[in-house]
Amino acid sequence: MKVSVILGHPYPKSFNHAIYLRVLKTLDGEGHHVFAHDLYEEGFNPLLEGSELVTGETSHPLVLQHREEIKKAQGIIIIHPNWWGQPPAILKGWLDRVLRSGVAYQFDEGDDGSGIPEGLLKVEIALVFNTSNTPLEREMEVFGDPLERIWKDCVFDFCGVKNFHRRMFRVVASSTLKEREKWLDEVEDVVDKYFPEV
Image (cartoon, rainbow, N blue to C red):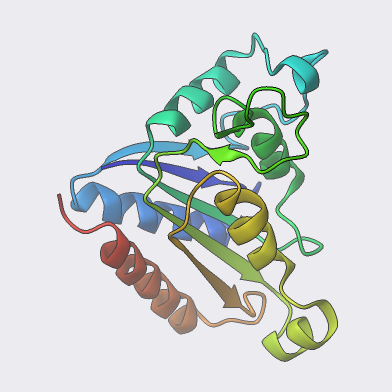
């Protein structure tokens, strides 16, 4: 299976990076073809250029590469921290530039964009791994769970991906090495479950 793995975290020693590396190791062990992208490391430019917002056209080779890969992907795994109830800006920019009309979705001819699009992604399963420093009780009582709504409904459902699973690890800042090792084992189990050996 072709799987896109996208990491949105700037710090190489973060737990997000540890998740990313475990995901890659697990997918490789299962024999999958992986498109691996650490957005910060590769210098992905999240800023729309010129008329790109309107036309979707860009000359940026990395953006074009991501678009071609996502059109081929049968699975996708996104890894990022919870910042202000949202993905980091670089990942939001990735969404803006890569999951474009004609790439990830399309509207019927004559639709001005106010209708319901047809999802174009071939993705059979989407996984999202998040980290947070907010305890679950406070998160749900004060903020709700905006990341679930963003990824499940606003992104993947919009692009035609119905099989979605998300896991939040918390509280990372006060977690022990033993807890983080257990979480990484869980990451491996989840990836094994949804992306079994080919």
